Image 1 (cartoon, rainbow, N blue to C red):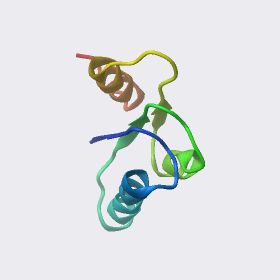
Image 2 (cartoon, rainbow, N blue to C red):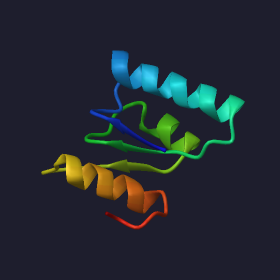
Image 3 (tube, helix red, strand yellow):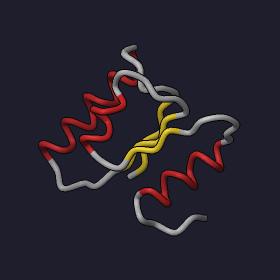
Length: 77
């Protein structure tokens, strides 16, 4: 599963995503990766739970999906 985040900062959506990923790690065998458009203080926590890519510079939805799939070991679309 691929998760997308606009940042790895300690605000609502990224914090909720991190909580969801922690729950999934503890209660399932699901493998997942995270793609964030920018880094931040939560980055190391995302990295501890699975493959994590931070996009820097120009990006698009296609680039986000491609980077996440490649990092998760799946061929790009």
